[in-house]
Image (cartoon, rainbow, N blue to C red; front, side):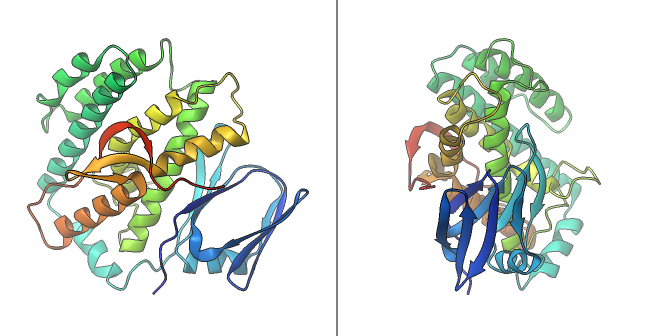
Length: 304
């Protein structure tokens, strides 16, 4: 059985990549680096002239390693994931399609409530105003107004998070948020495919041009954790330095609470996706297990 790696690797300079004896060999102007394949969870690629053969790409996919390419704004442009995710993949995918819409609505309401709850908690942790303003939306969320509550609470949240922030502009704050979100999105997509889900079939998102609708649904409660890490990392440049990207990638190893237990974000993603699998395959009545944000605490940090 192929294990799931734990390291996030970022490649942002000219590089030649090969796989030799289950080691990822990365050759740059600075020299040659060797990393065991079994240690790698995902690879973030940002930059030109990074060369990787199709055979090596296939080997990485066989080892359940996600590869994400990012644009100049640190937004994901593509994710490469293994096609065969799980022995029961077909059964789970059919169950995804056949699940009653009412069940998906219940799941989406729970996701958005926890997203707003985490945003309110994040403001409190950061010592910012606005937590009480956001908390008032949580109890009022229902099937008819869930999208409105998400939109209006997000607008208020970002006004408190960083005065004058417009999520659609290119600036240092957005660069950090986009990079952190991309890291978590890739980790969720990877776990979904490894578990047997088809990431195109979302709980709420249904964009036919988006291959990762389900990942974009499930990332919502994790965004505030990224926001917390990014807030500690705010700089003045749109282009992120290597150290800034490393700090933001640590979000996968930041602590959170799931089902009363403190785990890191990567483990929380595993728990969440397995919970969703039970809900869909077994028609379970359990609540989707989602993260609760806590102050920054590193658990098994990334070493790159």
